[in-house]
Length: 217
Image 1 (cartoon, rainbow, N blue to C red):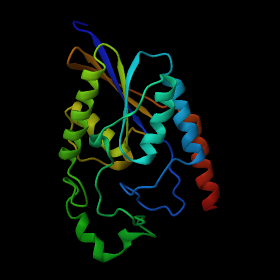
Image 2 (image 1 turned 60 degrees about the vertical axis):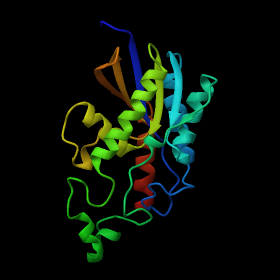
Image 3 (image 1 turned 30 degrees about the vertical axis):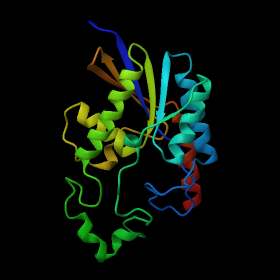
């Protein structure tokens, strides 16, 4: 590489305590479940021993709680970035299952008219711009070393697609961004060289899936 290497790790938060199964979005008060806290520790363990000099997070509780084990392991404070917040969504606070939620009610269908923007929430391009601004701030703060930013699935996936110059609208089922996953932007100087992906909490994801199936059985 021609310049110094800087890595910005985008860490998705762990599992959230959400017994009602609503789309919590930006609603305050949704913290990690017990399993989610395990996921946060697993991510911190994966990042341990690296050259991390900066830790940031979305202002939402679940992101702050996920960032805490990472920051504690490096004995540093968490910087809050408003640009890392969850995407705005007009279905926030509702159950959105096709068979048992808001999507079965015709009065909500107008919100689904344009999946390319999307019409039900914050525009993909707006998400990408605020996320990449946060990534750039972190890259500058950690130049020559590494930074960890805790955010949410859609913002992280949108930032990745934007950085890879792919169209921003997509099928949510195809997102590569599981709970407590790490999407790493590797920079050569100020130029993005590659993007890497890992799932330090993969073993815990299996536990979470098993619990959901048992509950629904």
